[in-house]
Image (cartoon, rainbow, N blue to C red; front, top):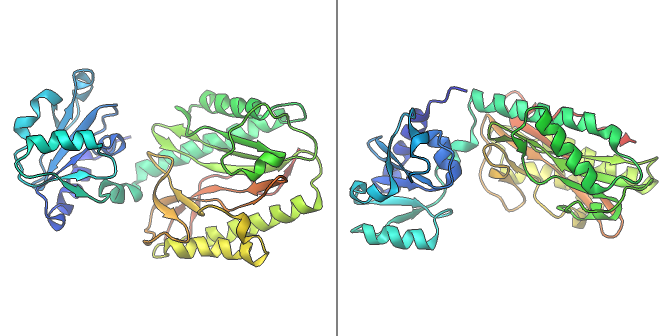
Length: 349
């Protein structure tokens, strides 16, 4: 994809005067990639209020900077370049050790800043949305291809491995995160790690997974039944599906994070299962699997247009099982765009 990295950096520069700094040293690897195109384990980018920028890395990655549109130097040469008297830092990502080293180089101490680049990353451009659509399409297809292999005697770990392998075969970089497969009673654990538990007839099986495609992360969850579901299983499935629809409908530019969460949570609370929905409704996705904005009862802020988020309510009954249904959607002025297309009707295998 063609990315206008100078425009992204210019937008960061425009935000600096209001924060009373002359420059910002971006050290989060994800944010460095967003602003320069360089993916590495050791890089930073210094952006000044005048719009100039300097990419700092070590000799392992300096060759990778050739062809990028930002000047690059090795870390050993950066001390003389820190000429701005007021340098902001990413308080959420900089280690204390790095902070101390930076402080020793500056006449005035670095200024910790609240997330700044993350605010820009939340709103996606056309190229980013297309990459997310592809990641979600791979996830949908992998799920369709693997469901025929889900049956009694197969383990949770088997299903996870099959899904992850199929996503790679379909063109994914790899899984967007460690796949969750939770069968039967394990479905009561929202982030259960799949193990050797064999699937049995009568199980509800929650499968939370997604593909990463060119750095962009999909996220979806489907809960399936192995054999005809019991009445209690059908009841909580239908309840979660109703809550998921309500939360999805609430997605709109201008809606608050609390309002969207409440739209889904109120459905579950009205049915007497409020205590069994133990996490926020969703989160943003993009270069990270969990990024701003976050949807929850204590979250602040309003959604904007072109912001991809997940909507993933769940009901978890200790020692019995649970249901979670999750889609990745994009907030749009005319109504949310659904990226994960797999049906949310209960699939009985």
